[in-house]
Length: 224
Image (tube, rainbow, N blue to C red; front, side, top):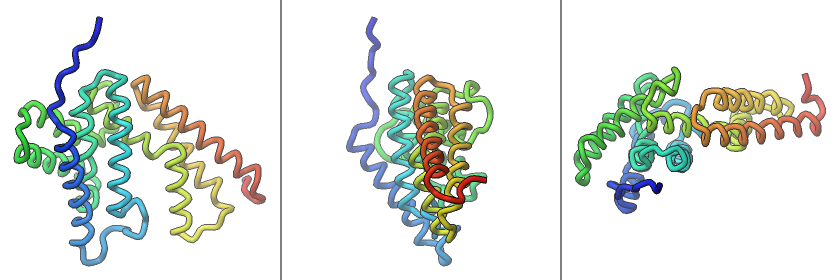
């Protein structure tokens, strides 16, 4: 029996406008700080990286939502706004602040149903939840899974190597640093609940492990 697909409440044009708003908001968050903000010299604390991370999470979340039967529109809009306050609010409250910004935007742009706005807001404000993902709505679970997966695998390795450069570490530290990405990937594989996210997590974990093995094999002085 086929699955009925409801018409999307978010058009491509509306989504593009939201993305532009998020990108501009992140840029303004950095520009408005006299000292350049918290650790802006790290690439993942820049507005450029944060927006790239957000769009990666959007892509992963859409993929998982489609396969797992979650509301794709709720998931992709929540993913788009989930870290909008990351560069201006304290880490402990960035999720709640991001949810507030998303709700205000959706309530003042377009004609979105209150239930849709509420689902998006609840997913964003809960995306830092550290408990059992099965306790949450499927859309929130998908968002958290996608957020974790973006920091795993090859992308996580690339960011860790960038971090090494900014910290003036030598290449002999690479295996240990990439090991942190392996550990993060293991944690993601163990925590995700959906079959789709689990498949992605194990694929990315394998890539991170392979890279660390190649480093241990090729670079003298790598091994403990």
